Length: 95
Image 1: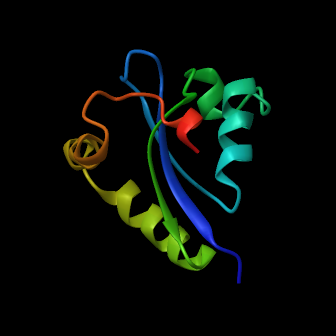
Image 2 (image 1 turned 120 degrees about the vertical axis):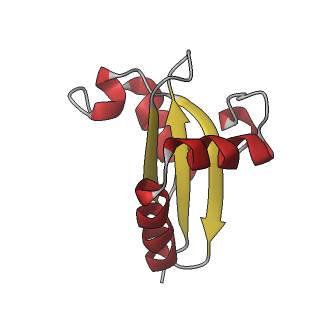
């Protein structure tokens, strides 16, 4: 099976969070930045700043983790982001 990644992107003011899953993190974040899917949630809310990501050996594990994160509170998501990225920097260039 393919590896997978769970990620969180936000807008420039860090007010909207989007959690996604992909098998190619760099390509997917590039799509968010380019607004490749013009009518998508991330395009409408300008979520193109990568603030959190984690790798999984199998895409199925990443999908399960995505569901877990989406079910959590906003406060838990913020705590998760700040555990690795306290300044909410865009992590895209570090990929």
